[in-house]
Image (tube, rainbow, N blue to C red; front, side, top):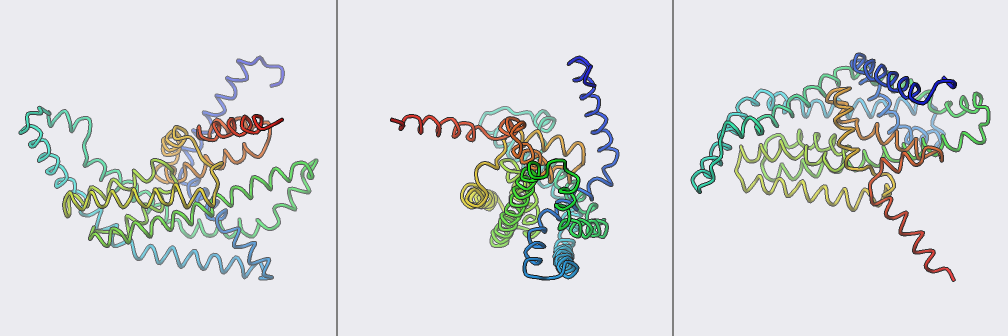
Length: 356
């Protein structure tokens, strides 16, 4: 490989990338539960280490964590399963009612002299498809959760390995004193990001569910769970989560409630996304809006609906890994938002201007 010319190297790297992605798509049914297991394990390892510092035996600590996860999973499953089944059963009725609402809007536009072709509008934009997309996404997540036993079993093995993984790395690395700090910085930043993002997402889901329950919108808990899951996708995740709830409020109650529903989503996400989350997480863990959108499309294409939910955590893992090493830091900057670059340019100039 070292003797090959640059075009051949690029060709080989591109071919290897295509083969890896094709393999990931073919192994989706196995890969998705495994990624979810890693995702849960990364979130729970800080609690495992805390229990171990409290001199709780590893076996008991892992048992406590798995017990809490099982209780939460089954409790949430019982609470939303009826709502999910009911919503999916009424999906066709909601589509018909939404299409009727759209027809009324078209009649109103034509009444004030704006000629709009209904067939042309439905061919490019059909609001009912938004409800179908939600149903498909929720069904896909539900099918993955049917592998809950396999996911939890994998989490157990990962947690048991977590405490001794650093010692294994120390024994196999040629220069552990130089390499381990990079790994520690990467793992600590990743755990911190996942934990804070999860806590903020839980708070977002709870607030959304309470607001929708106050407004009287059907299935508030279901939309709260959807808001929790899509809060991992910054910028556009909150918009995607709001669409079905706003449409349902429009169909079920009316335009005023739909506007209040949208206002509630905007308020909650502004507070959580611009005040709470940056304060605890830091601005340096952001992603470019374009990168978020492309990662959503890419991972959704590779891994299905669950890939869309894990798209930003997976991309953030890549960015944190790139940030932890000087040679690849420039790639992390390319994945980040423009404001990071602007701040790095302004701060040195400001410091220089105050030098004597």
